[in-house]
Amino acid sequence: QQQQQQQQQQPHQLLSVPKELWRMIDALYRRGLREKDLFVANGSPQEIAAIRESLDTGDEFGTFSSHSMAEALLSFLASLADPVIPEELYPTCEIDVQNIRPWARRFLEHLPPLNYNVLVYVLSLFREVLLQREHNKLTPAKLALVCCNCLTRDTSERGNNEDIARAMQPRQSMQTVLSYFLTTSTI
Image (cartoon, rainbow, N blue to C red; front, side):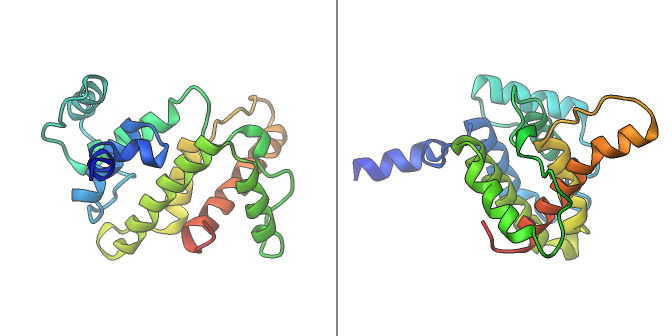
């Protein structure tokens, strides 16, 4: 019984994801999955600041809109010291129907354990969001773009259009992979 109480008190430790991530995703699960344009529309800067303060202090979240919590979550993921998806794991070839499944499997096998847990946790949330697409008007393509923007880093150097296009290809392929994860039961 004592073990069960510990599990109920600190579920973020069992999941091996940062507690801040767990708190924000839990808040969205509880009240925000049906919100139109979730993860696309901006939140309130004041609410986002209050959410960050609550994360820093461990206090309960005050009043917030789902858009503010979603923006705080994306900002948290994008501001991690190291991206969830390391650049060295970006696709080096174009991803298509023929190679996406084996490539995705290898990709998951090479992710560090914490990164894997965070990715699975975030994708699980986004899959739940997609189950409410009739209400929130989101699509796998939109959420894959959102995922790509907060889980990867844009490391392309600015140069001529050809250099930029070449540098963007791995991120576009990663976006295809994220869309695949959102629409299949691979993970």
